[in-house]
Length: 78
Image (cartoon, rainbow, N blue to C red):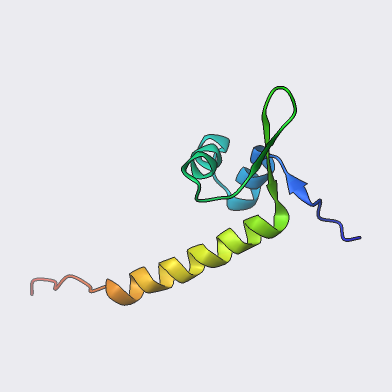
């Protein structure tokens, strides 16, 4: 078995993505990042494989955005 756990807490996911737990929670609640709710207190867990798929999707979406909105440097006055 690898060193990566199958399920990650929202705090773990936030660390991987270098963002806040609140942002990860928002991704989960919007359905952008699949997760499960476990236990009586409803703790959220994200499967490592789902996180990797999410990251790949974000790369694809970002590439599409960049292709559709090319960066153009503003002309500088002479």
